[in-house]
Image 1 (cartoon, rainbow, N blue to C red):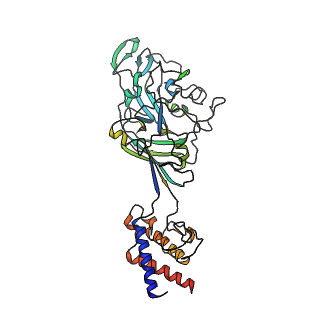
Image 2 (image 1 turned 45 degrees about the horizontal axis):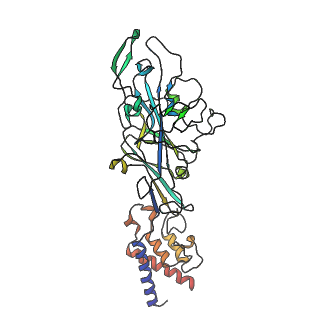
Image 3 (image 1 turned 180 degrees about the vertical axis):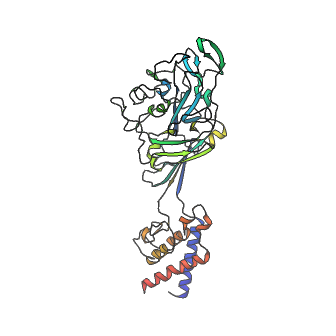
Length: 437
């Protein structure tokens, strides 16, 4: 090659590299959030139930029973209009119920248990801002905004006993006493996310006490009756609030208490299932749901808060998290902090990484140089733009992503110095020249 030809080639290569540096190749990122960029297909709904540990007990009287769950809410997915999604175990109040609106110390304490379901519908498709069926998903991140829980009063809705209650004391003496209940607070928990195996009906009716809408089994707000035998909990007689945290609600795959003819509702052993600790700080919590992307876009995820072994919540400590919901809440903060699903699409290989070692370096430059000018090439040969030719355009991609894997998030570190670019170009030409001698 003449000196003039070499100079022209260097100019072309320099221009190509500068062009690709000005417009680097990044993975496509899609964000799904209710009300964002025209997306309106997010959906979530909670279930919750109260558990009076020694329901009916009074001074001098120990009733033989299995405790008492707030069953009619457990039989539905009815909290879709709630602006907050609780998940975990909560201390509800110090007293317990004995019926007739009366309470005793002996019947308590009362706990509440909350779970929720979440999905992002229609994220797959061929339309704008959808994930193409043949797209490669590099990562998927679910972001949920943790905040204070509902507190006992709001959680109980119309079933709340009030600030004072009729307290039954020794000898059946009844007095009007303060109702000692938990207040809203930030909480920490290990959060589990599991794929739903069945389609459920996401509900919008909120509150457990509207008995004109739901009364136990027969009128379940048109929603769910979980597959566990014994309607929603394991059938053995229990008076164990620890067991209530795991033995009620949707049935996991492999559960021994499936009702006849019913199938399990979620899979806790799915390879993409998540169990991760989240602290009590306020703000977005992030979950890697890459392995659950098909489920979160399909039937949805079942989300639970997991208590430490053998520990029950107290007035001061809940084992739970509480997140903003997708559809409801009208303040600017509520809208801005709705659940988000962030999906990164594209080839998992770094552009410019010909040998697939996670680095864009001199080894990849050598591959590109050895194949410079080749036709019918693939990425392993140095064809990084998919046009089947190894040329200056591919050199530009390599230059724009030089040492990319070592400098994620630092754009300046991705760009070689001008001297390095010149050496890259000279090296490619020298290698190409030697191949033709």
